[in-house]
Each structure stands twice: as structure tokens, then as C-alpha cells.
Length: 103
Picture 1 (cartoon, rainbow, N blue to C red):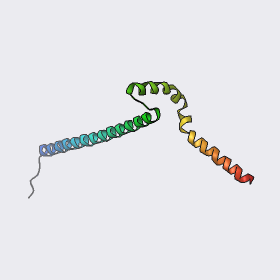
Picture 2: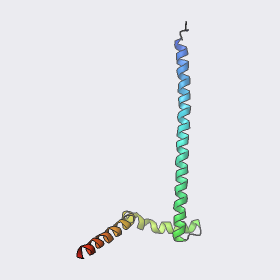
Picture 3: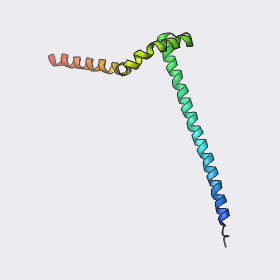
Picture 4: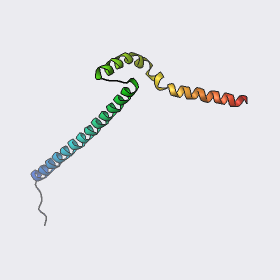
């Protein structure tokens, strides 16, 4: 016949399960933070490489000066800059349609 557990034993078991779950939660959170950190590091490297490529940056000081000089312009015109290619493509497409319709 199975032995009936006391309330104390049940509470002790539950406490152990809670501790195991807390440890598992910490592991998952640590893994998530590590993944986010690696993604950020990769993104910073990529952005830095692009910046260096187009501006022929030789030092951190040069990069800082150029970034500060571009900051206000980009801040005011970011959406316009990001959608510039789309506008050009739409204009070319419209011009092609007009040319085709005129033929």
C-alpha cells in the first residue's frame, strides 16, 4: 500500500519544483540576453563597416565627427532618405507606362 505523504512533504516537494523552475527561467533569460547581445554586436559591426566603406573612415574620431555632422540632416530627412529609392522606381515606372501608352 502506498504511503500517504504529509503536508510538510508535499510543501517541500513543491518548494523544490519552484526552485528548479526559477533556475530554468534564469537559464532561458540568460540565453535570451546572450542572443540579443550577439545580434546587437553583429549589427554594430555591419553598420560600422558600411560607414567606414562609404566615408573612408580612418579612426574613431573621424567617425564621430562625421556622424555628428550628419546627425541633424538625417534626423530631419530620415523617412525621405529611406524612401528615396522607392520614389525613383515609381517615377521610372510611370515614365515607362507613359512612353508605352504614347506608342
